[in-house]
Length: 377
Image 1 (cartoon, rainbow, N blue to C red):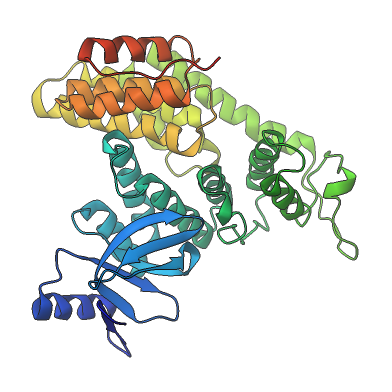
Image 2 (cartoon, rainbow, N blue to C red):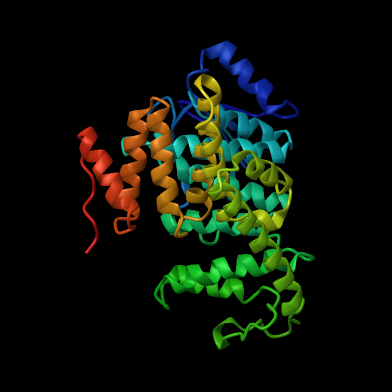
């Protein structure tokens, strides 16, 4: 590879190669890209993510690209949280990597601006979609995948989750609802909608779903029905009851009790919902209000992470606008006014008519002297 540094690793670990290159050529301040079937490229600069391709520039100025689905490992100068996640997923520590990517997403959305060289939030969603799928977390993989194709439709085929759940009908039902909602938001003949329709047609039939002609399973396949409504209703009712309990605790000011209840739901897949993270954010904000100094700041940051998870995973949720506003307040209270302004600007741009949060965001931006977007007509 001319102009950059390309190394055939053979049996060497990627980390060893990067370390050796850094010692030999001072490339620690540059980026590293490892793509499937290609030598590791170090001393490069990542310049963009668009049309399903990751673009990066070699030392000689030449820009090349690789499909984002082909990227196996990245290191980006100055982005340590992301680099840590990349190392964890490379070493097979998938759960830790997911946690790091999610933390990085929340931190980044609060600080990213339009002047960034490329959409880092989009890159994180790409990585999460792949890793969730690898972990068998199908619903989460679908949510991240749909967030990606909202911004980058070209990835509709290349980043599609592959591991449909075999023994988790609830996850399949929730994922189906997400895909159906994404299809409904688009024109019937939109290429992305058509592609999603074809994909859904390959899924096992969902109980009590009336398949439309265009989404009927391909000839020769046998639909596998999901459990009857009663089973799903029982699970959904249990989740609704848990969310109602959290709401009562938070609204009654019993924030520590709500936090303890949330801890009990931590490993429950059914609790993966925007309500769960919304009430976590509210509970942690309440706890922060009773504390001072560093403890209060840490609790507010945890609240901000919870709110941003709603925005990241459920951007079309009615709670997303409020969560963006509250995350902005947290940034301001933690002494990060520029990040607060970035979040409120994102709110006025993405949810211009979300009452009262868009209006409140414009007021805050006006006080800070930051222009806000006008509401859509």
